[in-house]
Image (tube, rainbow, N blue to C red):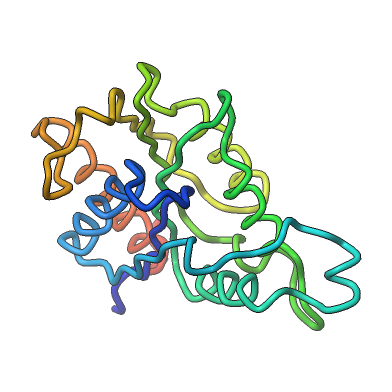
Length: 195
């Protein structure tokens, strides 16, 4: 059977983002668990704020199309998100909004329906972006994605990573590995028709 195909990204544009470091770790762990992982940087796919007039007049912007195609090609998603003002970032909401738009002769929410996602977060604060991740999980579940309920947050993220991008705490590294493996196993089970 073909391996699970996972799209991994952080909901942050910052070059030295803690969530980019976190999703890189998770992507590597998913590969170790047997998945084929496509790790992308949303900085490479800038999109305008969703605008219904723009969509009507010009269709989906090129980068929104690219992002949507990447989602459609994947069986599941690994997402690491910060939280801004106790909410999920506008970047993530905007990307989801564009990718949710159907093109001609296309089913609604085709990029999200039937996919599986794991959402995690990292933050310098004590609450580890868990509120932003919770909102991202809710958003995805409302548009047809099966979202793993596991909470994974890295608090005090400015102190959590080594120079090479790995986590200093071996238990945290193992927690990331466990969630990544659970995502791969869930996708594989669904692809094989397991109940």
